[in-house]
Length: 86
Image (cartoon, rainbow, N blue to C red; front, top):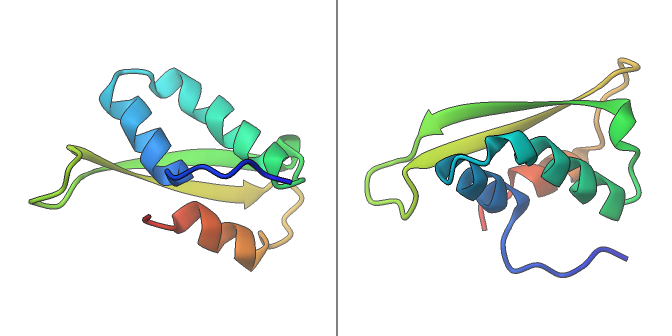
């Protein structure tokens, strides 16, 4: 069962990018996938960094993109969870 975390994975990754720790962001997403019983080796993980909207608490907005290496579609539930704002 995944741990309950008040912060979404997107928020955590964005904070890592803001703090200059983007090297660890992929590991964070891999751990997140493991917690949800998915094998991280099955996925290509990409980060799309954008400027945050005006009035946002953070200066950076990071979108996480998952692509399965075997060409199969990524579970819709997983995509919704990884894209969740808060």
